[in-house]
Length: 123
Image (tube, rainbow, N blue to C red; front, side, top):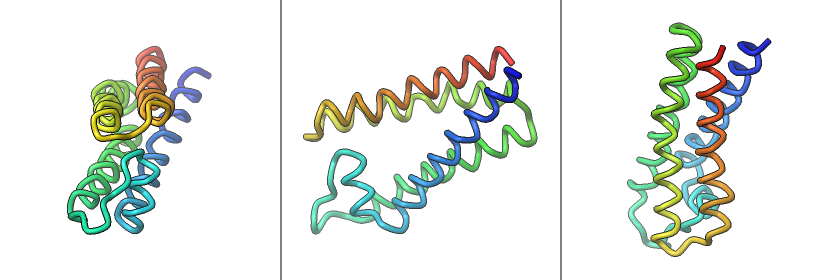
């Protein structure tokens, strides 16, 4: 039962990050606003594409690890990848985003990813 719950949460998180990554690739402006630091009108779109590629890569890697290497590999992956939303928290705070977005979205995501890692280690 724990393995099913832990794997299910990991899949949901991976798919959610995949959605975010693809959104940054296809709709970078609205995705940046949802991130908490809106893109400048004449800003360099390459940076938004990098964010989309990063998130898409993380998501695909997580799904591949879970499918082919198992829950413990996914647990280590989740533990390491939790650094990204923690960094996103600091980025939003340092670049004019609101504390509610920084902590309510990014920091909360890091906590959920860490919970996922713990569940996967326990499975």
